[in-house]
Length: 246
Length: 99
Image 1 (cartoon, rainbow over the protein chains, first blue to last red):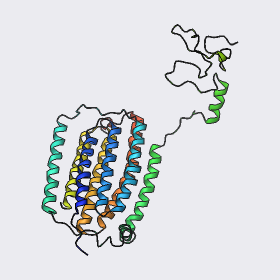
Image 2 (image 1 turned 135 degrees about the horizontal axis):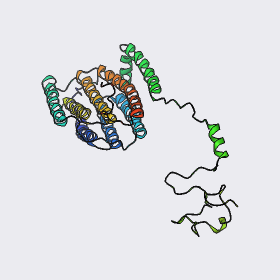
Image 3 (image 1 turned 60 degrees about the horizontal axis):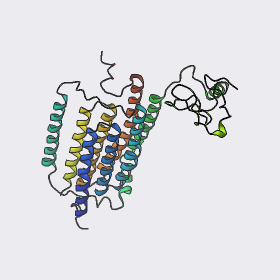
Image 4 (image 1 turned 90 degrees about the vertical axis):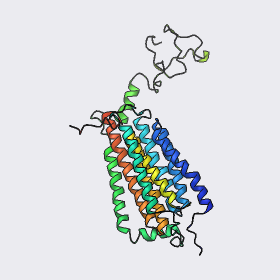
């Protein structure tokens, strides 16, 4: 077998397309005001990383990245954003003076440290490559390791996942108040009350949802012509406030 | 181009994630930045797996993904319960343990 460990041209193209995309999306994620936009940029980063995994002989991890991260984790983020309120934008007030500058300096210093460490520790070698270990297929090789050498960690992982699911249920569970109505009581209250049909939506200046309800003029009187003549004789189920039942 | 370029990319992404943690106030955005850091580390693990020539790095990345999934579930549940009691997802407002 030839030494395939070197980076092929196709892989270089993949890297130079997806890598900058990744960095730009990550920067936009950190800088965007809107949390939903940040989540979408994070999805871009994760999908690009999946492409990079696929380019590096890790097809299983690429698939898991798309399914677990982009599919599950990010959707969870979006759900929680919707629950918390999408307009929960950041305050731009600096609570600690000089924190931004200090953070940027720390970030730059850390980046320099990492890049220096990689340059001196790894260098520009081509590496061994995964052709030999991926001979049976990447999934088979991973499974062989996972179910022999790392079997204990794998089992502990299942305990972790169950604990996480239980913990999420306990944390997110909301106790109903002692006098919350159940469905039966709600239905009874609705039919015993004024309006068995659903009430108009919030922001609608009407007390009834029926097509036979006339529109109101600014002075409060009925607008002529706002109800179809065929319906004009019919009253809604219950009279509007202020009009006498016929 | 050599595989170490992937390591540089992972380092850059990690630093961007760390900056997000340091700079953002919204707890959910801080959490997304932590996810970005975990992803950067995963890229590094996969690249080292390829440089060294065995699959242990990929197994590690797999475990990181599993732990990250569990961590996201619990973290978001905590953020939600904090939001329910304090009506805010800002990390500055969760200061009840302060005094």
